[in-house]
Length: 224
Ligand SMILES: NC(=O)c1ccc[n+]([C@@H]2O[C@H](COP(=O)([O-])OP(=O)(O)OC[C@H]3O[C@@H](n4cnc5c(N)ncnc54)[C@H](OP(=O)(O)O)[C@@H]3O)[C@@H](O)[C@H]2O)c1
Image (cartoon, rainbow, N blue to C red):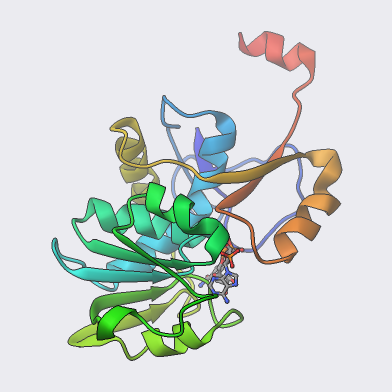
């Protein structure tokens, strides 16, 4: 199984007990067969947010979509999902992440550390701010106006999404069809939780950071 226990944070317990059915305590679905547990654990947080906020755009094939902050947990997911909907996707990130964002399928990339405006006055049908109100740049302010007359600008800070099991089921299908991949920056063992937080708190992780928990040999044996 893979799943999501909500946006409330937690205690980093090694075990948690959840109902099988969708509830306030979270969601569960069958893990994609072609993914490691680390990859499967990395996906739900960004995917639930990206799916929820992209749905606000009702994106149609051929439309122009810009993802501001395309290299984070939500952004790396949003780029791949918008491409799967047939959109022409522009991803905004810093210099170090341009290749990563292109590799996720972005048709164009813009470096917010070097550019203050979108190319040649381009207009978008949907702009997703995937990094939220705490992170900005001159380019981000400019993106808010780079919309077609019916275009929409949505921020990931615009409300709290409901986690839906159907999101995980849809992702499993996409992953098994080779249409979606997890982006993992680093994995830290549970014992290095403080270092993991220090790294994430710098605000520049690429995709996701995963915590690994060693299972006792007794349990691994039981699972075989
Ligand atoms: N609505 C909700 O319920 C909800 C829940 C959770 C989170 N959120 C919001 O979602 C935000 C993003 O979460 P996340 O986990 O996806 O973030 P994240 O993975 O920590 O984002 C890291 C990425 O942000 C990029 N970044 C940093 N400063 C930037 C800037 N000025 N312009 C563009 N990109 C920048 C970094 O790229 P570079 O290294 O290339 O700069 C890095 O790849 C949170 O900060 C929060 O505001 C909302």
